[in-house]
Amino acid sequence: MNTTARPATVFDIQRIRADFPLLSRTVHGKPLVYFDNANTSQKPLPVIEAMNEHYREHNANVSRAVHQLGEEATAAYEGARDKLARFINAPSRNELVLTSGTTQATNLVAYSYALPRLQPGDAILTTVMEHHANIVPWQLVAQRSGATVKAAPIDQRGELILEQYIAMLTPEVKLACVTQVSNVLGTVNPVREIARECRKRGIALLVDGSQAVPHRPVDVQALGCDFYALTGHKMLGPTGTGALWARREHLDAMPPFFGGGEMIREVRFDGTSFAEAPHKFEAGTPNIAGFVGLSAAIDYYQSVGFEAIHAWEQQLLAYATERLREIPGLRIIGEAAEKEPVISFLIDGTQATDLATLLDLQGVAVRSGHHCAHPLMQFFGVPSTLRASLAFYNTREEVDAFIVALLKVRKLLM
Image (tube, rainbow, N blue to C red; front, side, top):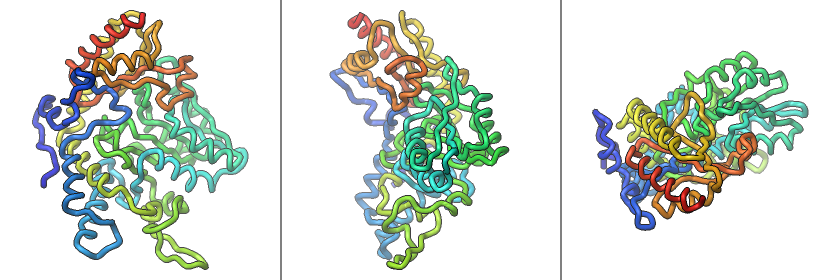
């Protein structure tokens, strides 16, 4: 079965939407408007069909059998590694560790790279706008090592104050971290500039790419970072998939994080020797079918093209922002000059959770809460926000339906 979507010479939104079966369903008797894409994306038919075909025709474990099914499963799984490495322009497939997502990838760096190097008085630098997955692992290893975690500030527009981030790259900092795109604000951070300043100081840089990869092409060599983490389920793929790209010299020096099968060369009670990277970090049976699906998701992105995706999403972002400004008492949280299609906001006199609950009854799926970003909420002095996050399969008509629903539920709550 050919799981690659047909190439699109023009951006045909209706043809694209036809590839996403869930978008055609109703919720509470209303047509679904799905604006929770920063949480998880919907899956196109080629992804669903690729996973179904794997289970129907090729299901077996990887790297453990010489029979035909085992060879087919291994080829599909390792083929996904190859495709993902090319997708982010990694120098080598062997620099790509397949993980369950960004959280596992970040913890791998925390415990295998950072912890063995940290001493009392050392520091890890992150930012106020980070997801908890780019804060908590550093706090845990800091507590165990006597190091500290520092957070670079942002301004009221939701932009990183680059000069202060750079000023905080002091000699005690052994690892720097930054999200490429904020999951709450949509802010796009100047990763290349940060990486350049880190290299000048000999500081390794980890980039959380979870919210970037679904919206823009990523070239880890051009970015110049040391580690890049991504999550599959935010980029049309299945849950439980993701990857860590790391420079080969780091992977070679890092000890394994998980122990078990498939990450060993030989096990003896007087000592175990481990496989080469990336396999020494991939203990146990992986999410084989998930990575088959992620491979199909990459094919789908490439068939549509990021140039077309970016142009459409930026149009939607501008239109949705303009329409939201029409609503009395609405405050947008985060208005950076460069954003991906994520809009967080509040309406005076209402609670974000109440709005989200009532919007759901109108068929509109948005996110409410702290979005795994407590420090960011504290910076803006709010307990939570409502977040509408768009994807290239969304439409202006859906934005209009969202605004109509939002005005209706606002009236109910005022």
